[in-house]
Image (cartoon, rainbow, N blue to C red; front, side):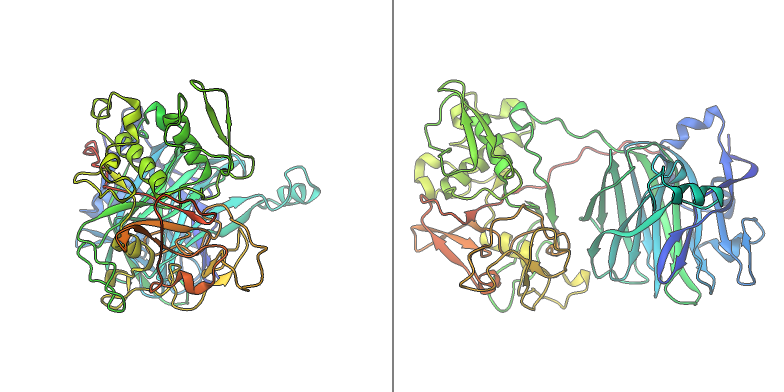
Length: 556
């Protein structure tokens, strides 16, 4: 049966625009009350905005009138939201308040996908609502602001401690004890206006993941997104007092597929991946590097000490014939042969693992290759072979073994690594064939920063050649200095092993390190080293084939 409009109740959900930021304001908003028969339909639905009738049946809306006041009536609705060519068009009126439209939903770990057109000089907002325990009222739990310059995660916390006199005064006056975090985390991007884009927002627990046009652009740990979701809300605003028109279509809401179970050996590995798309891209005219025929994934961060300890626990608990562990690693080994245990030293878990040979990295990739198998039967029965076969047949050529066809995980080659670090696709606003000089999406020299520096062009390197006070920092310490594809620390912190061979006896290094100058991070700079030696500032990251996702369940 269709949804039925019952009555209007106060609920605080809409957004408003103030000083160029879409905020959330309280208003009277029509709320759709679903019957028990409709409850299942709230958990998964798709809206294609075919007719005005379906818009009125499923969606609540509101807007600020230019002459003053707020409207939620059907008669006024077309001034703000209307179906045009089977697409939803939002019309923001010339004032400082945005317009909103919402639809009931139900779920906790959920996926929201849509197409949208960003209005020129405007802002698009997307959010999920529910009871917010921090604010102790129904409000949004997770949300985004989308501008031509990028995407921001937004969040809320209290303005004053809940038991403080200030909070009591606000409550007595009918106000909100709320502090709006409009840039909780920012992904600087170049987003074309007035063209269709695909947006996906996934929420699992408190973790928010955002994909734009098929690639991951933002992850953020929210404050309250693990609460049940009750509404999807879309918004439109303007930076100026002008009328803007934005579009939405093909909005799909549903449960997020369960996280794939990991083999026992991979428990605690938690490698985050980013997809490097734009297959068949041209190479960098300045260096001839970076052209990659297909799409692949690369680890967002360098392999960490904690991940390497997990690897050791999986392959070297009984014996360690290849010397994968040594006392120069910040990893403690306890026990005795046949029952070794490994754990990262306190404070080092998230640092990149260094003092590993290229052979060590190959063995990690071989192990990861077997973990990517579609079934446990695809892995060798002999546990010792988990490190010796797979992506690389090490026995044949040791540290110079080539990647085998069909490898599921590997050390990136020079073009793969180079593209992930420096490429600026034309579709994302770059000139054809454009590559940045530094892997922070900049041509200018980065600044040397400390962990947590939120500047957009910063890295961990030695600014002064006589200053050796810098140290390795945890991976991802510079949240706004990612490459276009979303990798971190491809410049500075630790050199990274590259699959390419040099002089027939060495393996390539790229990216520079904490004890190197900014020139070491340049796209034109590379180095090399013996694949069997360990260095105090050399680590690695891994790449893999794009996993084949199961087909999505049909939406109601």
